[in-house]
Image (cartoon, rainbow, N blue to C red):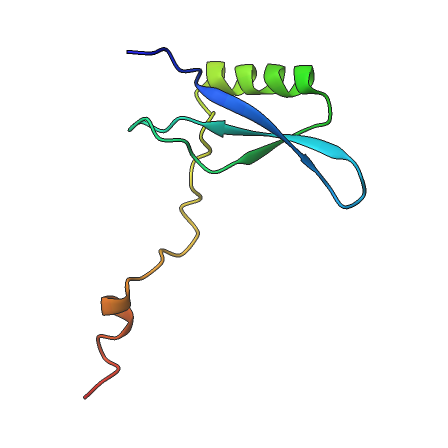
Length: 82
């Protein structure tokens, strides 16, 4: 089996022309997650930021328990029809 880095870096150029580095992490099931901003404009600083997150175990941000859960269509339509 091939070794995979726990994260990959990618750059995005903002409309202002500023380049910001983002990272994608591997989830527990081996898939790549959505991209999160490192807030860094230099690749080396972005990599160091990701390594710090990796050591702290926070590479994949925790979901805020205060955010409402997205309902399924079945739950939304339960009392819609009579």
